[in-house]
Length: 194
Image (cartoon, rainbow, N blue to C red; front, side, top):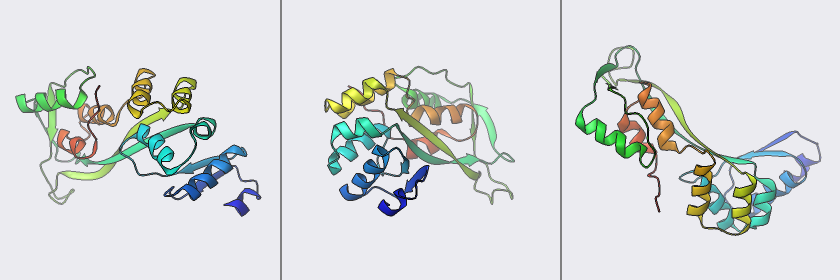
């Protein structure tokens, strides 16, 4: 990566940040004005900040170099050829309420279920779609990071500033008939509440 930085690239992509050495190279590249994109394994977007701090990256460098963090999960898409609409059952209504809590979101009056046909090889699903959670590092979030605030405080601040959790992204896909509640529950972590 050091040799690459001398080539004056606009964007540098680093496969995965697994250790302090890789994190330091990414930070150094960002400090010299390069846009750096990389991956990191965490449960949600705010946890990426904690992971980098745990690797040994100083908090003041995170605030100076990280623009944003995106968490993503894939869920299966209901087959458009055979998905079946049905009125919301009490169990699905309870699952919906659990999915979107503590946020308020209009509960759909109907849901879709997988059926299975030749197009989807009798699975009821055809393809995958992403659920996304994007944490933008605003001045307030950067200050919370530099003050070594707890991850729950950073998460709370991000939610207040408009970050939508993976579960809400999933709820939007369920409401649109793209996927099922069960699919979202498989991949979206529970929202930590204080």
